[in-house]
Length: 143
Image 1: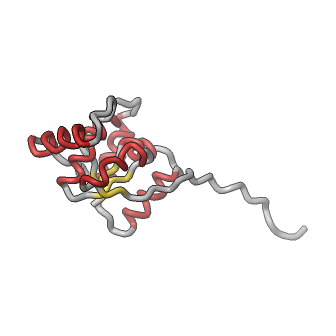
Image 2: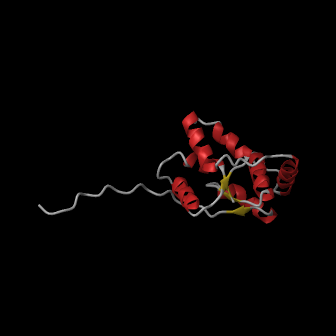
Image 3: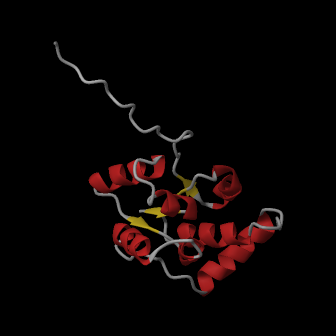
């Protein structure tokens, strides 16, 4: 299973984006996608429309992994073990949820999550550059 970070949830809304293309590939290959309630909350902070929320939820098939006491305890442990970095609390929550669900995480912010790898987080290597839309083709044929 792959847990999708907020930036990938947002990228799903952009037709032809690197995130949308990659997610389409995982789905075509039978991959299971989910997200943490923290990433889902960040996504819902928007701006997003009800239709965009519905489409994204359909891609996830409503797999928003619960966050409870074990995830909270692990998130606190990650926070303390990784230097108590200001602004990293949400990343700790997302990482803890994925670690306990035995899921890989895909994010465009790999540098924010690499610190959790020694503590059990598995990161999916994301494309480093967005895919450009195909260039328009000139009509072919003879006159």
